[in-house]
Length: 307
Length: 307
Image 1: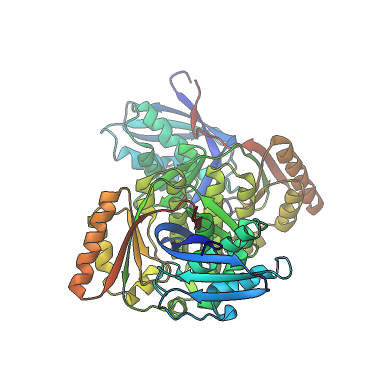
Image 2 (image 1 turned 120 degrees about the vertical axis):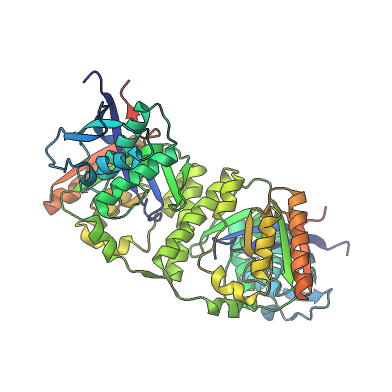
């Protein structure tokens, strides 16, 4: 593997409660490991070093579709060989497909001498998301590539706004049930009450101000979703209990990660994030639902290369 | 008038395009002038030093209703005499009623030895807004009292978030037509498409980030309203032309001030704000509509006392 570039592509949390479809952040862990190298013949070869049986045909593979989009803008004759070892479980709601797509294009760009901007890489990687969920969204892709917390102000034209944030500790619980992104999307009403929309954008404004001004209490007060969570949380067993217990344990707030089933909570410090993890564990042990828990910080760098 | 406290209460711009019902900012000019003093007998006396024929009965007067709310929390036996000279035309859409209500309670609080917090003053002043428009809203009141740009994250419980902003120059044109706030409210649909709501909160997030990060271009890109402006701007003759000409003249962006009919535009510097004023003038001269124009900066202090 000495002639391969090795990188780590992070899990991400999209939506951030009130910021449905527009906010997201990157986690330090878990991360997928990817190896990429340039090849002599054009085209893309994908191998998996894990047991998820994901497709390897480039057009049907998330990393492959992202690289095919990149190849159209790359010098003629370019080819990549990609090996992927996923640690972010597909279907967990913490940006598994985004990690594959983001890692692939960031790695490819490095191998090509960094000829593309981060915005261009986001655009390429969105083709990977389209393969995974049918929608070319960027709310996991952008934080995976930029790191930290990102705002997608607009997809067309693409406008990614990186947002500074104070130190935050994240507890994510992934109950082992399946929620398909496409199903979770279909549950949403196409019309929402204006009153609820106003309350939502007041909270989004509060959350952005809280992040940029490092005001933890304001972040906590603003983590309220009156539009999506009331509908989607029904799909997640134990959601209300996890949320109530986490707040009791000291979390600032949190909610559904992406379209679920993972639930994330933000805390001001590591001991609180661990106490939140213990509270989540209790809920799912009592419910008899298998689960994974990750305790992490926000990853400020996004995809990282092995030195 | 030597025993009167004299203060200047500023005009304010509510909504700030995408931030309908939640954002607002204070202007340096125009300002109402108010004189207040404590009286020996309890209750409120109001006199007007202008020609607007506003009611003087306290319960029907905006400043009076705000002071009646304050009196309920003040020491028994307190009374105020208030003289008001309005320079902010009632019905102009730049917070005329909010200026009366905010000035009254800020002045009264100073006379009482500053016993109330700014949030309490906002709560009292909202009773004045109720007299004026039937709704106890705070998006003009808060910037008049706090100064600068404010976010009302929540009205109940009240959560006012002051937002820092880079230097901004404001051009306001007030075409001399009548738009009643209550009518403008009734035009709005009670249900909005989820897609439009998402676009709106993406822009609100972008605007808050642009203000706090002093990113003028981001402020400009985020000044887009896909929900309220398309409906309400129909009531304002020349709206589309004013907007188009102002952007051509270099404005960052802008839109309806409050519920209109005033239109405001933000610019990075004073010469641009003057060029925008010239563009607005041309539009209304061609249309044959009388108008007033104000060129101002954002007022960082809110209500100010004469020293």
